[in-house]
Amino acid sequence: DIQMTQSPFSLSASVGDRVTITCRTSQSITSSLNWYQLKPGKAPKLLIHAASNLQSGVPSRFSGSGSGTDFTLTISSLQPEDIATYYCQQSYSLPYTFGQGSNLEIK
Amino acid sequence: QVQLQESGPGLVKPSETLSLTCTVSGGSINSFYWSWIRQPAGKGLEWIGRFYNSANTNYNPSLKSRVTMSVDTSKNQFSLKLSSVTAADTAVYYCARYYDSSRSNWFDPWGQGTLVTVSS
Image (tube, rainbow over all chains, first blue to last red; front, side):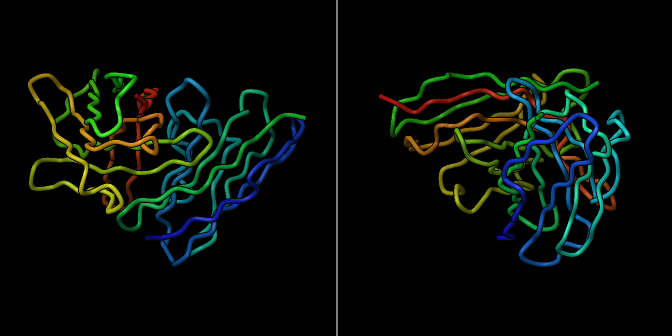
């Protein structure tokens, strides 16, 4: 199985801050990396697919980059509604695996 | 807009079979892969498997011996059965569409999730 190492596990930032979450994989997955946003009681939301493609309807303050084994999710200007847990997921090979999650809080 | 909704018992006894259904609205269940994903309390997400038809099904090897997925196209529903459950199977269970494009693939949309507790 491809192992996913996501960091940080938890972070606190102020409204307007630039926030970066990283995801590292145990082997190269080219650009087969997706990012999801999870909020309690709500359906998880796809933010980014294929490493850098913004899903339709997702605010442009979200962006993704990377390829191979190192990937980044960036929120350019943090908004209160971005409070959530973020997960990366590799779609390169079965079984699909997820990172451990990054819990984002507002200072 | 496609929407998914999980349903099923919230409490299952140890050693019994967990059964969940996902109802798809706003679109056809045909011509897509459908997946189940779970999240134990305080832990990360775990992919359970994906189903297209009986000849195109993949399960996570960690659960393969206990998992069965199926689709009922007449009801626009797909289902999950997990046998011989233990407390370790207590989790929020999500259903999701597995979208497979020519360049990549991803899970979208997802259901809201349903909590299943394994306890006597």
